[in-house]
Structure formats: C-alpha cells, structure tokens
Amino acid sequence: MPEYHTIFLVSDRTGITIEGLVRTLLTQFDTVPAERVVRPFCDDADKLEQVVAEINAAAETDMAPPLVYSSIVDPDLRARLKRSRGRVFDIFDVFLPAMSETLHLHSRERVGHAHGIGDYVDYDRRVEAVNFALSFDDGARLKGLEEADLILVGVSRSGKTPTCLYLAMQYKVLAANYPLTEDDFMQGRLPAPLRPLRPRLFGLSISPERLHQIREERRPGSSYASLAQCRREVTAAEALFRATGIPFVDSTNLSIEELAIEIMQRVGVDRPV
Image 1: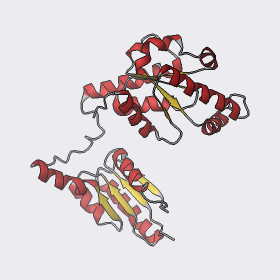
Image 2: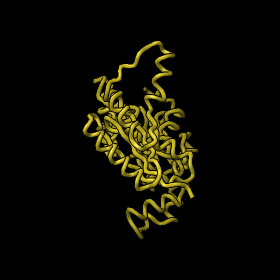
Image 3: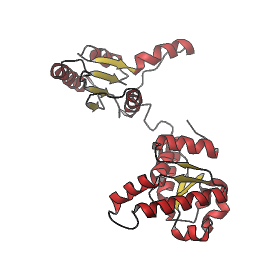
Image 4: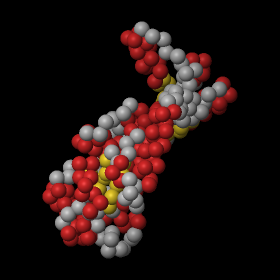
C-alpha cells in the first residue's frame, strides 16, 4: 500500500497557479493517499515559519516526508522552505534557470505578477466579459445578444452557464447562453432570436443519464428530472443541432476547461493569452 503523504501547496499570492499545476500532475497517478493543504499569501518570514512548522509536524505524524509544492518568488523564503522536512518542488527552480539561460535575460523575481491586475485594459476586458455572461445567462436578455463572440445552446442543465463564465474569466470571451425548450423541439427549428446569429452558435449535449442525475439533485422526483424526459430532450436537441448545422459536443465526460478549449477551437474564437 502506498505511503501516506500530506501535500502542501505554498504560495506568496493566491496559490491558483500551483494548485492548477499540482492538480494536473496528480491525474497521472491512479491513487494518491494524501491530504492537500493550501497555504496562500506566505509573503514574509513569520508566515513561512508557521508553514514550515506545519510541514515538520506532518512529517512526524505521517512517518513520511510531505510533498511541498512552492510558487514563492522571494529567494530567502524559498531557501527557508527547503530546510523543512518536506520534499520541496519549487516551480521557479524548475523553470526559471533554463528560461533565463535560453532568453539571455535575468528574471526579476516580482511577487504577484501572475494574478495581479497588471494590464488594466486586459483586466477591464475580463470584467466586461464576466458581466456579459451574467447578463445574457439562460436567455434572460436579448437586446445586445448580437455582440456575443459565442452563444451556447442546449437543454437545461447541460453545462452552459459554468462554461460561459469560465470562457469569460479565463479567456475574456463574450459568451452568452440560450436554453432550448419543448416548444423549440416541437417546431423543429431554432428560436427566432437565434436565427440571425447562427454562425456564433455552439451546442452542448450531455448523456441522458447524467442529465437525469443533475436534475434529480435540483428537482427530485419531478417530471423535469425523469430519465424519460431527459432522453427526449437530448435526442431532440441533437437532432436540431444536426438539422441546422450547429456544431456541438457532448459535455458528459469533459471538464469545463476542456469544454472551453474544444469550443473555441471548433468555432474559431481566438484564445487570448
């Protein structure tokens, strides 16, 4: 049986970068018996000493060295962390020396530039995109819909809203979403507000079984959540996508991140950095 290791994610800012990296790395292992401990904003010696004490205590309790993933910029704090009883993986040690050598430049070791506001134009665009996604969620608003870079369509609870918000926050895409209803399926055509915007539409489908599970959590025992109803709606939605030439993807086994990239690539929306 694998040893138990506490995993520490230590950052001088939010910890978002290191969390994403570690989450990806851990997917390469079938089973990791571990507890994850996130310690953001470790930006001075006192805070770091508290984390080092936690790491050393975990090493004693686990009878194995904790795994410590660090995105701390300050070299003195990084050096102190490496003197803990954990096995430290420092992303700056891994990448910066080789990048510096290749680019013939010295890194500036500035704290907070990965997730700070930085470029105010870029930040304002991100806020605008999030506000747009919220304003045009679930067909709540039609005036101005033509400004959307992308409009997701699909049955209720197929993942349209979280995907739009992710596209807005991560890539500054002006994404709206519009639900398909029984009336649309009976008529066999797109809702009138969407017809002039056909090139910007992208469909989300989902397995009826997964849709049933999601809807049951929201409205248990309702006809809306019944497996038969879910099957009818998914079948009708996919038929409408095919009849109108709308590209679509099955969201059942895709993460929001994967959905976002798949959609942008297939629709041709730019992926800004």
